[in-house]
Image (cartoon, rainbow, N blue to C red; front, side, top):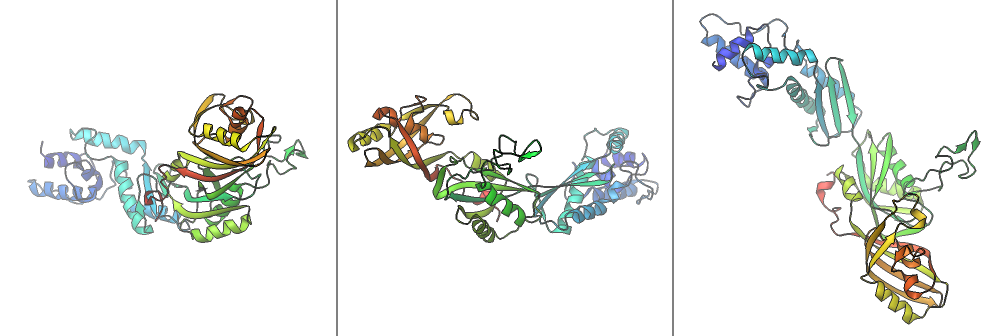
Length: 427
């Protein structure tokens, strides 16, 4: 059967609009909309026929029930749904009525065409409404991670709008001790601030074990500036609560859920965060990032450099300290889950590398040591031995108890840091 014979068979099944007619042949020609293709085929069939052939249908199409004439209306509804929202990219999806999908099958069967001939109704709807949305809003289609996604439910006559998260990358320095990276809900009241009807004695009714956190300084400000509904903090690892984070800082991404603003002044945001933190933390290098940056930051294979103040139970000589640090340099350390984290870490033995270890005695019982180690190396336990759970350790080599009295992270260094690659940032 020729394509003109197939066209006649489709058209004779009942009133069929140009879009539904052309959609059945979408895989046979390119460069036309389905409506243009259908109109061309209808005219060609009429000219090729011995009898006059009606070139313009006037009745409602039995296949799409007239929905292919509503592309403009649906696009306008999408545009109205985001008229107060800043977006640069979009995607349109369609939930087609089951009856229309069944009609498509019947149309093709009646003309002897395969069920999968041409294009699906919902695919055309996505494309045609999508093109109009782009023109109305000045945005571009993105099939991977758009700023906004529309779901057109044709049967329910609704437009569901999903505003996807925005992301801000940066580095933070923690300049005061006893500040966790993320908010730390009180374990006694589960963050409610109450035990029964009374304020929680453990947290003083705040719901948190610590008054401030890096997340608490950064996320609310970013959420307010971007007019989001919530925010989540993602760090490239984390330091101990009582440790400072110095040097160039630790990479992080703050995720803003359902932001109404995206094109923000990140330098101003940086200034606002630092003003609120008032010297307790500092952020720098803030940039608008993509969704992929979250995974890259969380999976960063970073080594760390630490500076630790150490106190010994017995007198230690400078020679013995240097010999012990030389023994640790290049050593592979076996660490069974430390006592202090065994309530939140799986019980297992981890092996980590010490790349370099140096230090100086201040007096016979006190020293400052600097350790450059593989990510995940527990420095406090490397010094103390953690009752034999870490081996070798500084305490074990010196044969005296040792404890870290102050710890600073002075560098976080990734071997393949992606943070200067424009692929992961918004321009």
